[in-house]
Image 1 (cartoon, helix red, strand yellow):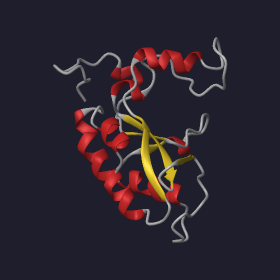
Image 2: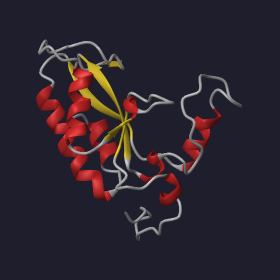
Image 3: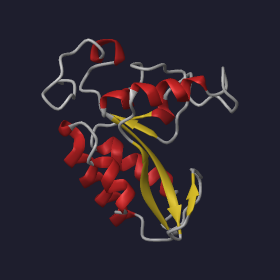
Length: 158
C-alpha cells in the first residue's frame, strides 16, 4: 500500500479505518501484475464538496458529482474513491484491463473484494454510475447522517 492510500485511509471514519486498510492489503495481494490500487479520495470537507459540486455548473469543467455539501458519504468519512496505479506512476480508471493476466479485470477484482466486505459500489447505481466510489453507511444515507451527533473527534456516531 502506498503512502497516499495510507494517509487517506487514516482520515476515514474510525469505524471503517482498519477495515479499509485491510481491504487495500487484500487488493494489493490480489493484483499481481502492473496495477496497484490507491485511494484517490476519502474524507472530504463540506467546502471541498461544494467546490466539486460547482464544477460544471458555476465553474469550468465537467460535472463530477450531484451531491452538495453534506449530501456525499465522503463528507462523513464513510466512502473512498479508488484509482489503479500502473507501473507505479500512471493513474488509470480502466475497468476492463487485466494487468495481471488472471482472466479478470483488475478493477473488477477490487470491486469484488470491497463487495465481499459489505461495501456498496457506485458502479451499481442506476442514475449516476460512479465507478471509483465505494461506501459503507451502516444503513444510513446523507439525510440521516447530516443530523447525527458527532463524537469528540468530529465524526458522526454510526
